[in-house]
Length: 193
Ligand SMILES: Nc1ncnc2c1ncn2[C@@H]1O[C@H](COP(=O)(O)OP(=O)(O)OP(=O)(O)O)[C@@H](O)[C@H]1O
Ligand SMILES: [Mg+2]
Image (cartoon, rainbow, N blue to C red; front, side, top):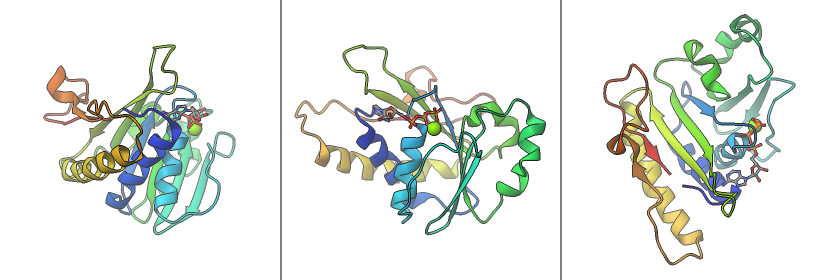
């Protein structure tokens, strides 16, 4: 659970250290869910000092960070062919960390081992900044990476929080009815934060 854009940036920043070239993170969620904010957290933590915005019209932004980051936004593309025409297969290569906004729309084109991050806004009108992030690993290697991220994020969110109630920020979504389970996946742990 994230309660502010800053917290979503912290979550992105905590994922950053476990990302390696060749990793693909697919970001899903409605307009304004916070996909770009999450990408900002990742990019900044990987040493990119520039501005990070949705590549809605340009479709792809590349950031020169610790590893090259390819930031795609395929919202405006209507067909798989248009995505392929963009040079998608070359962009999703072994040398970069690839972050795809609206990745769910091109799921068949993404490597099966991608990490899916699904961001949902709260429906509570008193908590308009609340977001739920569900992490769906496409391969077992993500499980330990997500554990590492969770440990760092819990510490940072607690340190940054003024709340004393301490309601849990993370839970195992697959244990609570398969929220974090991914279609055609055997066992997948969803970390919600
Ligand atoms: N907890 C939160 N996490 C992320 N963003 C939040 C949160 N609470 C409020 N916001 C606001 O929601 C907006 C999220 O915008 P962002 O551009 O990241 O969305 P997006 O999912 O990338 O949308 P789009 O599909 O249009 O690119 C920002 O204005 C941000 O300040
Ligand atoms: Mg965006």
